Image (cartoon, rainbow, N blue to C red; front, side, top):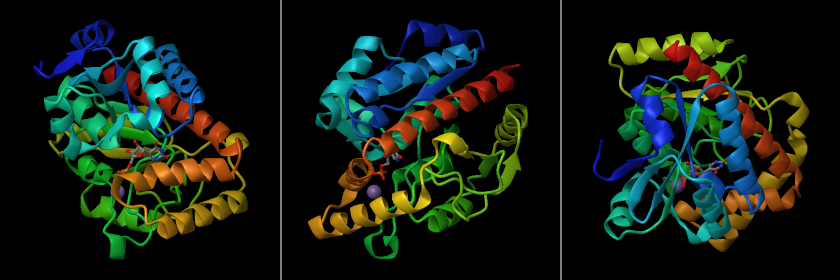
Length: 303
Ligand code: PSU
Ligand code: MN
């Protein structure tokens, strides 16, 4: 194993014996949700993965060590520290490691650490993407570039409409990243099950997803895949309510001149404030829903 990486015993044992493991990210804990719901959710997601017969591996950087598999105390620390912990994407990893600091991993950096550990399945809420106005700002999440090159399947509820979903799909197409709709032809938009954009392939069972991923990787086709899992109808938000909140948050973003890595956390927090507790409740449910699908698919893959 990589000398910078600590894999906890439960995850190590699962990987050694060819059991399914599901990676989980930590930026969603520190920057994606408020305390204490973030820690409660992180624990519930781990329990959900276990209940489906897979082993959870939450990923972060602690004391400069890449970690696959955290203790409850470590989850609690990341949740309490919140945005005081550095948000770490691909470019940030060496600096946090070389200075022995702590970092919360985004989709991109979680994929990197998962892949080092030998984990191919990863559940989260939403991926980063091409931001609205990217033709001027060039703001395109490093998550997309990672999906192009790292062999990890990312189970998410689509992309939030703080992003330009159409351009995000175009970018993924260019980079050869398949977007699979689970039980849907439409790309989900995180809080709502549809966006009006089509996915590339609709697959209706975890077995079919596992088999498509196996073919991709057996063929040596590098890179990940997006498995877009729509939020269940009963937890979905009203489209008008969420659009209004997103429009306002985007306006405030440009008024305040917020840029770079601060953009996504700002937008997530503002949308959540503007919709009261509603969006947080939906957010928690969709993450749990993605954990179930990622675990079922990992189980099917190793059958
Ligand atoms: N989208 C969400 N929730 C999140 C994120 C995105 O709905 O928590 C986080 C993830 O960690 C994702 C990161 O990888 O934001 C993307 O940030 P950026 O756009 O700066 O690459
Ligand atoms: Mn960005």
